[in-house]
Length: 242
Ligand code: CTP
Ligand code: MG
Image (cartoon, protein in one colour):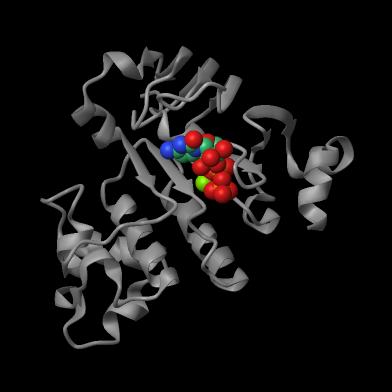
């Protein structure tokens, strides 16, 4: 069977409600199953806005966002949430156990699936370190775990749902470079058939992506692989040197 999870943006423009100027202009790209698409750009460039259009946190002003050829505006929200897992820039944990937090998107997941997701997300050790394990209590907003632990639990939660598309919005920024690298290697093995879209600040996080979009002021100013962009993109070079 053909792999699912092809994401296409066609000439997308977006304005926040009430705003005058568009935050995204003429955004076109395709992200394919089995591949990793990365988005990089300075703060305020529009990265979070861009990835929020696929799960329809907002709808486009013009243009189209398609999932496997179907405009997301024609899909019902339960179908989108079952097929697209987004790890938000500020991941949210609920008051409750780790298990409760991990099962959020897939209530019938087995314990084995939870542990597998934790292992991929490099969070297994953290959960095992207390005898309460999966029953360990998380405070509202995840205030009793560190930023990096919150990110990893949130990544594990996304993995549990086994979606066609993963959106990681700056999900590796609180991790040290070695954990970041380990996590992404493990992730690669577990997401072979899925489309992976990674927003990042750190070039090392996305250097091995199949394609990188360089976003500046709501526009894609350059695109290519890491090596290509090093040659062709002054904006990318600036990010590399920063
Ligand atoms: N913005 C807005 N209303 C919102 C969210 C964002 O007007 N509810 C604006 C921001 O002020 C910014 C632009 O939209 O000018 C793009 O924001 P965002 O997509 O969040 O930028 P990122 O590239 O994600 O920035 P960062 O790297 O800081 O996460
Ligand atoms: Mg952002």
